[in-house]
Image (cartoon, rainbow, N blue to C red; front, side, top):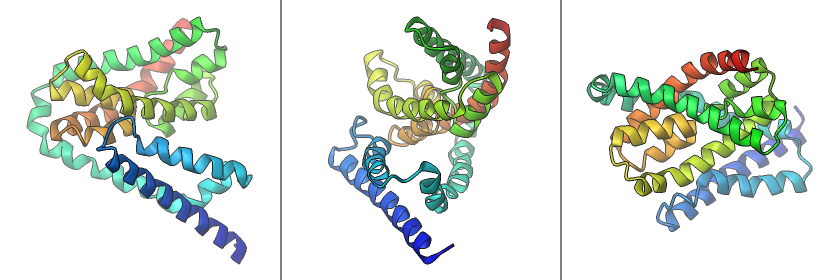
Length: 232
């Protein structure tokens, strides 16, 4: 790698960290309001920079790889809140199983039906179906059932951002105050970004969000391809 490429990669790494710190500061200034979403703000800062500099996403991703590598340890660390709430989790096995299956089915079905009613193509519909699980799994499921993996990645990010922004208010609107149900819903519906938002809601919400995110990542690759075969 040349010196110039190293400098460019370093610049994008600094820009990424700077965008995130700016987003965190704005989030804190807004008193952690869910609509002031750190991921959405960081994306809004970085995307125009990529467009103005004509930087391909592949080059940016390579530059930001040191940050991406931290995702693995961060995911493993989520086992800690699960361990701390193990007794509570064991006492809710049946409700969790029912909520998980209902959540995965409702997420995929509602997205496909709404998009279908709006005239979306077959590829778009299949790209939408796995939108509520973490990106690598969603992309793999999409490719398996005939969707566009890149399009699915966009849907996953948008789903997570929107979920983290609107779900807390939705809980208040429909009067869902059980922390287990709130956490599970955020993990199943909005994957990692929903789980990150659950941190602000409470320890129980976080534990069940981690559980919902993890189990939906196991169930989705089984249910979505099966449904795609059954319903064409």
